[in-house]
Length: 199
Image: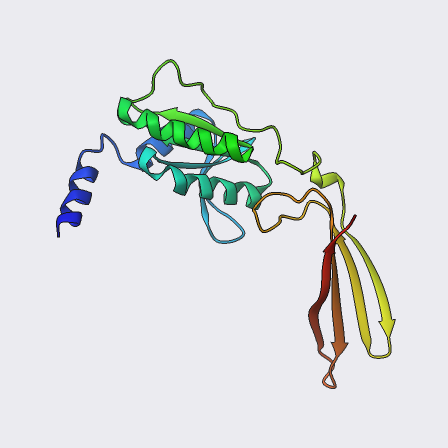
């Protein structure tokens, strides 16, 4: 019960709802609000250059993840509008910026609200590109080769700039070998036979 009251009282102190800041900022940027993306998530604001997540400073880690997902879904640069309601929130802005710096993420951050001071850059600009992306991955197309043996087929697919398990673009292209076999009913069964990084 105590945590519920604490949560309620913290929410009651808000000067404005998150939606209010979202509307103000997105309208100023001539952006589109609440755009439904391919994965059914809803991007807070999409501008000509950025896919943006909006959130209060205490939710900085949440908007960090959201903005990264929005960027991947839209092929736009990730952006965050971080709401600083008081000068005390600046430490949370610093924490977010520190994570962006240390992970070398291409995320730009705008700060809004009464906690913003003249020392905060507008926007704070993250890395120019993802580390190891080799620049513009759109220029490097996947290649596919097929090897047929009886009723089985092997596909060798090389995928440049594939996102690896760390959430960043791999420094080398990835090679994936898919195997397929046609069943008696005509359907194809697919599976990953092997994968490796191209040297």
